[in-house]
Each structure stands twice: as C-alpha cells, then as structure tokens.
Image (cartoon, rainbow, N blue to C red; front, top):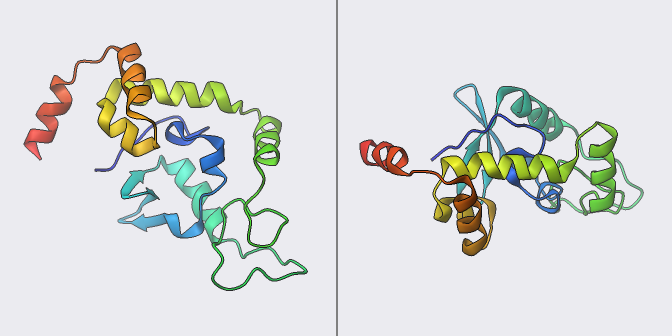
Length: 154
C-alpha cells in the first residue's frame, strides 16, 4: 500500500530523529514516481519532495579525512563523524533556518494521516505505539467505512 501526503515539510509525521537516519537506498524510483521505503512500506512521495530526496540520494558521500568503510550506510543527511548521520540538533537548526518548524509540521502531518488511516496502520507506518495512534485517530474522529470499502475493492 502506498500512502501519499501533501505536506512535504516533515514527511508523513516522522520524527526528526527518524528523518536524520534516512539512507540513499530507501529512495526508490518506479514508473516515474518516487517512493521512500519505510520498514516494509513503500510511501509515495509528492513530486517536489521526491525530486529533492532523489537529488540528496544521488550526491556522492562527503570526503572525510577518516574513511567510514564501504559497508557504512549512505545517509541522506551525512554528519561530520565518519559513518554517522547528521546529529539531531544540527538537522533541527537547518530546518529552522529554512523556515520549517519540526513540531508543528509533524503534528499537522499526523493529524492529516490520522484522518485518513486506521490506528493500526498509522502505528505500523510511523513506528508509533498503538495507544498513541488510537489517541491521534480519536482526535481526528474519522469514519473508516470509506477506507474499509476501498480495501475490500483491492
């Protein structure tokens, strides 16, 4: 199942901690569309966000004085320490410099997803505790009849 969300600021309600650990091999292009593989789930990205992430994934790894070895992941947001992603505070500072406030953007994305997905899928997709997902869905007060009908039609 591919899920799409229009808010590219904090994609799909992921925590910044999780975003900083994204790797180049999680970005997949298929049939002219870009997907971010999150666990077992390919998540369809909005075109502009997909283009930005493809550009990040295509960049060569930074040249460091100390090699991090060929088996190390290719981070989308590489840090200065060999083999490690950008530290959390640095990524948050960069987002803030571009006018992106992580918490409000994440909360907006979670609210939008909670209005579209059942709690079990929301928890699995975002790595949330099921009680947290249920609480988010309850706040959204969604009716799942449309979702269940779509799933039955697949």
